[in-house]
Amino acid sequence: MALDSPLGESSPLSPTDRAAIEELAAIRQSIDNIDAALVHMLAERFKFTQSVGHLKAAAGMPASDPERERIQIQRLRQLAVESHLDPAFAEKFLNFIVGEVIHHHERIASGVDKA
Image (cartoon, rainbow, N blue to C red):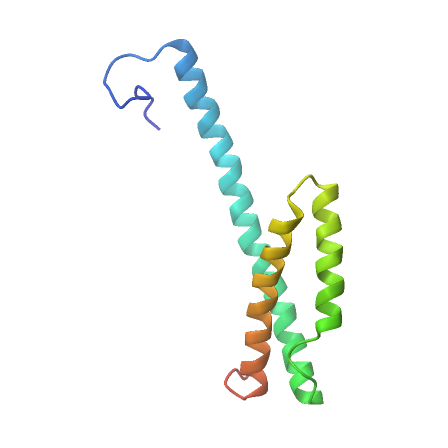
């Protein structure tokens, strides 16, 4: 990564600016690593939820389980509080994931996704 002036100018950087840019690059690398881990973890999660979808379809169970979803949201909100993460954000994140899972389960039950 080139260490240019923070304003995009070609003037030399001060030691403070250089240190800040290097620290920013290191922090961004950590964020990139976490993003990669999240993608891998979501892929693993969806492998398991696909299995659940096939089991539910075979047993004639509904794609959605509102009581399980309620418990999971409550659990995730508590984990968020303990981790100093906004529980409303955590709930939105889980609701998005659950919505995708239900969509996949409905596709499996309709025979669109066979595996």
